[in-house]
Length: 155
Figure 1 (tube, rainbow, N blue to C red):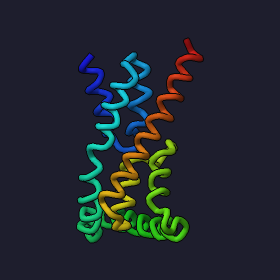
Figure 2 (cartoon, helix red, strand yellow):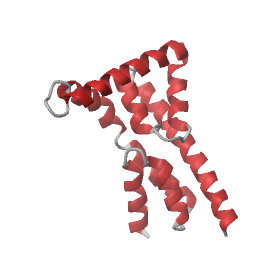
Figure 3 (cartoon, rainbow, N blue to C red):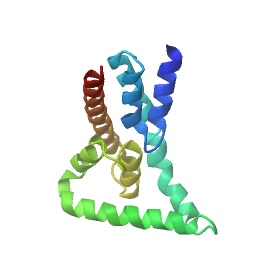
Figure 4 (cartoon, helix red, strand yellow):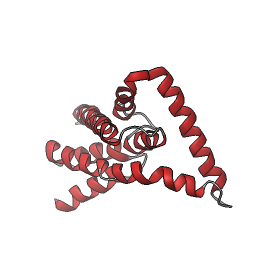
């Protein structure tokens, strides 16, 4: 049983898969919903401070390197351009926009991407973490309900 929780925890830490894959996995293998949900949230949130504090520094460091420079520069430009558009549209509701970006489980969104955007935009760390945490909780609820509904239809 502990092995299954550990697998769900690790899945929730993987970029692009995150909680959106971990919660359905946990429900599909029969783990109790609430403990699995909590384990997946913790796993998804664990990398957030590391991403916030170091992602931009790594991208800045690598932007002039021979092999990775073009990709890192592209990431920085894309992040800054997207961030400026988001700031212009969201205005004072930037943290609400971050919450919704992370919370609505579609491909390309999630804690990793949202935290990277917050880092590139130099958003306040505490407010960003709260917005990302709220988004992770919302995404977990959506994925849990969707997964339970699909399983109910199958069985």
